[in-house]
Image (tube, rainbow, N blue to C red; front, side, top):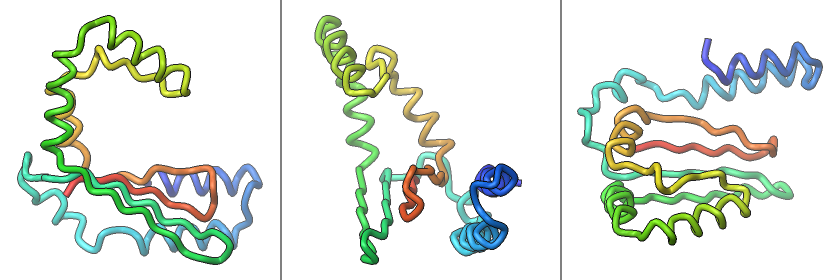
Amino acid sequence: MNEQRKDILDMLAEGKITAAEAEQLIAALERDQPPAAASLDARPKGRAKYLRVVVDTVENGEPGRVNVRVPLQLLRAGVRLTALIPPQALGRANTELNKSGVPFDLTQLKPEQLEALVDQLDEMTVEVDQPDAKVRVFCE
């Protein structure tokens, strides 16, 4: 059982949604599944060129979409450049990130970790607090 289906069943068990709503959510999950999951696994490792973030929303009955495509080479270069940043500047950046609610430690960013992430990231759906929004992050 995948994680999203389990979450839907948990919400149903907790009474947060009705059985009909759970059925609709599960049906939507099944529609959103890629038709051939094997084709994602067939992609040669290291072949991905872009990190894509897609956000679909419905606000006031109007659909909206944000579609960002970032070259992985840009991310790799950025990770390598962090080695050139003085430790004091990294400390300040970490402090500001923490103040903004982003607990991220730039001193721990390593190129090999980015490669491991790219190798493992086929497709992931990130749940958001709004019921009418869907965020997808994947490599292509």
